[in-house]
Image (cartoon, rainbow, N blue to C red; front, side, top):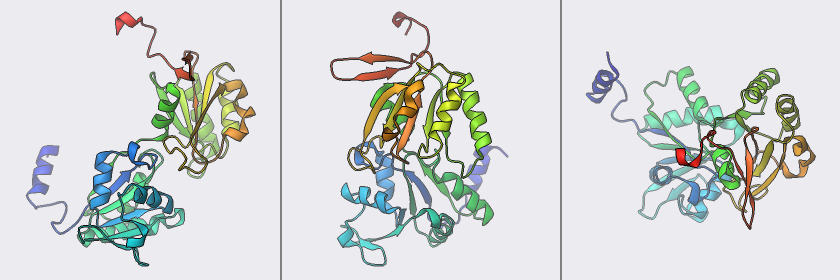
Length: 294
């Protein structure tokens, strides 16, 4: 059976999602501020019957009116929207992810649309994989899941410092909670040898070790950008900032690496600086062609 035939069969009600089910949306809100959130993400969160979000993301979404204000929400998390309809707002924490995934499935089976909120993009070290894994474990094949993409830190941070990702690049998470350090080191070394621009996530741990591994394969004068809370202005944990240094000196600036909101963008031998009267940018050219070749 082709994909088209399978889709047609489901649409005819012979298989697939029951008609009385809602939809589980896994929504990326980028940095969390309205200027960097897609119109679709905002629309899905505004219209959802249930929103699952951390306290920080709830604050962001209330500030711009996507969620009802706190004083319109009772102690059970039920808010009354301007049109008189109710919306349940559930607080998400790291320790409740499995519990909340199962709760989301139950809400959908009750006919409710659920917006499960993730910072950045939900498929870039976000919540997407857990929800699919939990759906598989709980045999929740009746639950429709839709991913709503968001602006991830690699793209937001790159925009803040210019155009460092215009050639091939990769992202590597330094968190060894899910992957052992040996595997992370192998990936870092391969990326460095392959001349990818490398964007490091979760720099609150192991970033100095990561930099030293890349230095084994890349010259110390390669440019590095240390970016904090990209796109969050003063609303982030430590405030939005960018600092350009070199690979050889990157670990001399511990004070610039402020926590989970920090990303490092490590350039290649082709990455160069471009300056105007106000600031310095990083640019990685797409290739060795002349401007006339574009």
